[in-house]
Amino acid sequence: MTYARPDRAGAVAPRNAEPLRRRHTTFARLVGAIGLVLLTSLLFWMLTDDAFSVTEDSVRFEGLAHAEEAAVRELLSDLERGPNVFRVRPSEIVGELSTLTEVDAASARVTLPAEVTVELDERDPVFIWSNGALSWLVDEEGMLFAPADEATATAVRDAVDGDAA
Image 1 (spheres, one colour):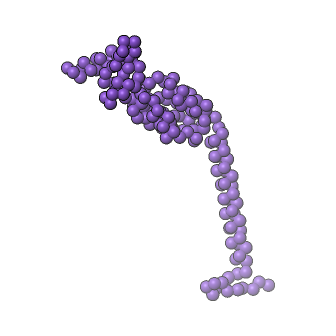
Image 2 (cartoon, rainbow, N blue to C red):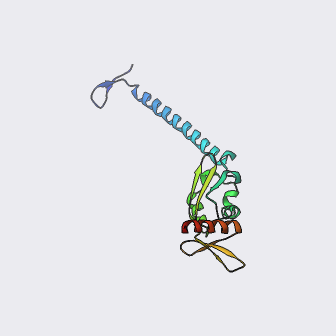
Image 3 (cartoon, rainbow, N blue to C red):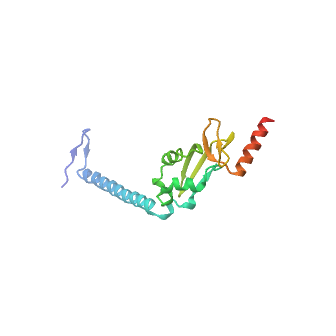
């Protein structure tokens, strides 16, 4: 024999209403646990799969004119070791590149699955300083920032002559 009992509002509810609530709670916990396991598996896959590893080929440089790509790659040698793309910090890349004298400003962009794009804004030469043996490019602030080879020296002379005309 089942007895009815009043609920909080004073209405009479059947005695088996409580086990129904417990079943819903158990189902919600089960769904939550399954979701947690799936998300953990997804995170593990994204952090360990080679598809998300940065390689030398997946690092691109834009705006290189006076700086040598080999010197820039050497400065960013941590990227050459194949870190996971989620561990690459663009702010650290920009900080490393700001130590180069050729670089006036830099930005870095990390995209999925594992691509790093580094954009360099290099200093603009306004004249060439030479002591006979060595020639250096000089920017508008008077900073010697890169050695000048013959092709660069000719391009700067042509640009200066074009501005003077």
